[in-house]
Amino acid sequence: MAVEQTLSIIKPDATRRNLTGAISARLEEAGLRIVGQKRIRLSREQAEAFYDVHKERPFYDSLCDFMTSGPVVVQVLEAENAVALNREVMGATNPADAAPRTIRADFAESLEANSVHGSDSPDNAAIEVAFFFSDGEIVG
Ligand code: CMP
Image (tube, rainbow, N blue to C red; front, side, top):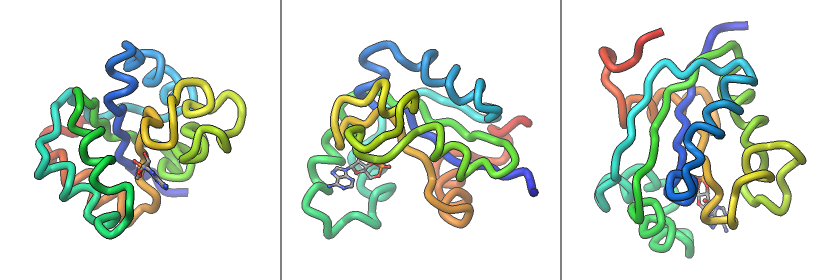
């Protein structure tokens, strides 16, 4: 199986509660290598562009408000099968549905404040990684 990269975002609810290290440890323990990382505050324009696919959804404005409400940590994760592996470690989008011992089951506050984002396909991972990182910022 090929080595893949995926984009992870540690969301404002998690950075606010000082969970960056605890969440990163879960990723690393699962075999995901953090090969790019930065702590940033998303602008409204960045949040709207990143979540453009959800523009017509009723939660879009609230999601953009939330994602700009505090710092996020954007990460490039690398492993064999990284996209699926990261989604397994994160758990379901709604923490009420997330499997035990997943990041969202253990840390998420709500469907919106669900602590982490992860790319949902290799194609989207490439787009999302390029949204935040230039080649020189990813060091394997
Ligand atoms: P994320 O993986 O970042 O992708 C879109 C985000 O929208 C999702 O996680 C949730 O945080 C948020 N969201 C809020 N309401 C909903 C909803 N009803 N269905 C899906 N995602 C939602």
